[in-house]
Amino acid sequence: MRRLMVGNSISVAEFTIDRPKNSFFSKLAELSSSKILLEVAYVPGISKYLVIAYTYNKDIAKYVRLLMQNSDYLTKSKIRKIRYFRDRDLHVIIAVKSACEFFKIAEDSNVSVVPPYIIDKGRRTFVVVGEKRDIELYVDEIARYYGEENVEYGEINSTEKLARVVMRRSLLNLVTEKLTDMELNVVNIAYRNGYFNYPKSSNQETIGSLLGLSKITVNIHMRKALKKMVEEIARASG
Image 1 (tube, rainbow, N blue to C red):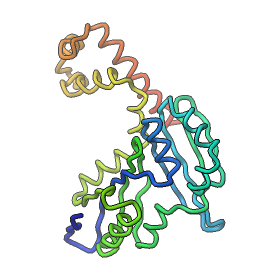
Image 2: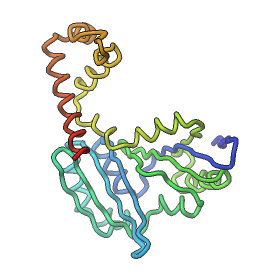
Image 3: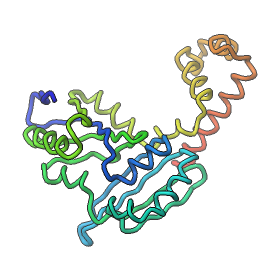
């Protein structure tokens, strides 16, 4: 693997790991073909890890129950307690782990994993920050544990790139999972063609012609998509 090249002692890098290993949440994302956002915190007083996972994937419930019933898999994942519930369209899983090798490698390498991180269909993507020499050590350790062929990484060398990476790891990013492929496509085409500008640079007839849809169909998909997004903005604002 190539080495990180940075101009100062502090390094920030984005990693992707393909191999789930014994991760309950990676396996869950893989089975359900979903994107899961995770927050992990170490609780020093009881020497345990608290994991809070979120997803909007509506098919995840059956896979959560399937894996929760597999005591062997829970044991391999070091999960001691686990709870699953729904808050309208949002699926939430809270687990307590006695150990977390993923975070232990970071701790032993003297680097920090920036929360939250995402598991997308089994692929784990995350940001690590630390001194240059410690990041280099972390690269070796994470590759040794997961297999060099399963680890990809790259330096984040600008504040603009870091901001984009952090935004991709927000709960709002998961809202796209609520949208159907057509709803997402209509919104993207509308945005790229200035539909949301003031004044508008295009109309629903134009968007429909680009997608081979009628104006009425475009209107239906757009209203459904905007309703789903506004629901989450309203939820976040209390």
